[in-house]
Length: 309
Image (cartoon, rainbow, N blue to C red; front, top):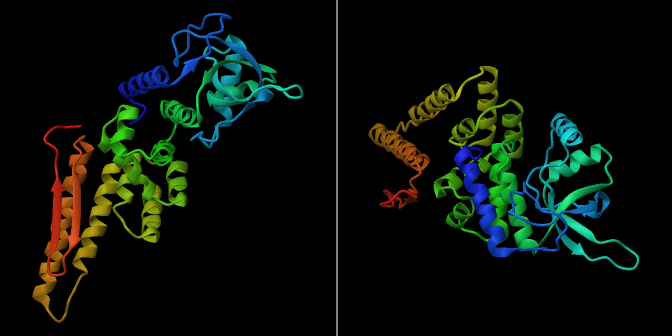
């Protein structure tokens, strides 16, 4: 998963590289920063909270209230160990103070608001819209408590905003292309289905199993059954296998029984290929599968790289 320790290290490294390559840090000397993940040395400014606007590219939409109160208590006891990162979007004028946009640190900002602080320590970064958005998304993808649908939506946003290919996104996030593809697949589920899966604590592997069912209404019934029966991933896979196999058996052609047998065999064959391709993709190999219905036959085209991505 994205919050694996090795992946977290990769994300932090990618963020540091991103900043080193694209950003100019404000070097006005006030005092040294020792605990910044985004840079190894820099400057901290106390900025009024009311002058900081949220980042519109923040992938996290839900913030658990209990967690925020816990963070607020920690900040009250120990202070802010890691300052927020902001960028200047509107310089000061004779009638108004400078306005900043938050790049990283949404939870910390919300927590200090609970403490009724007036100012918050920040590092000011010179970043354009693209860099600001990219850092906000990558910083959030590091978080352990970002659920897998939020992770997938953040990756999708990264791809759409910057017109990245899946391969480019994988490089930016220090993960394999198959990892990106698997994350994006679960977004085939409707918003209602995602909310239900999240609410009842089902796993990402549950979600990947559900998308094997094409019809949304049928999927919802299956999700409901899995929840009621408290089915684990293995039981869910077997349950869906059974449903798909029963569907294949119901394909009956009374006019040509022989032809019906062939159709059933072909469907079983195609289903087996799909399972094999999915297993190979999950192992980290960037396999691509394309099926084309040519009328009298189905053309299957597989592309398998010689080296693992």
